[in-house]
Length: 78
Image (cartoon, rainbow, N blue to C red; front, side):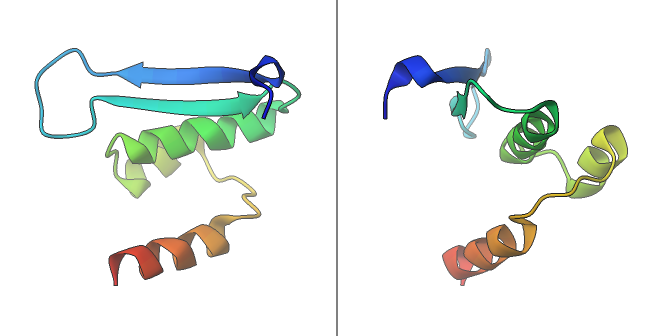
């Protein structure tokens, strides 16, 4: 993958915690606004925000990968 075709969305924690210190998402330059919204929602989930709070804040989305992602998470944690 050529890094020139991507932007980065990076979150770094400023305090000590046992949770993730840094989360980095590599996003394509040609991403639509709706696709960017999905990335932001995924980052909110990665940071530990509850699904209800995220849904209330961002509203509902048409995420084509939602069912696939839930199946992958179930496999990961089973």
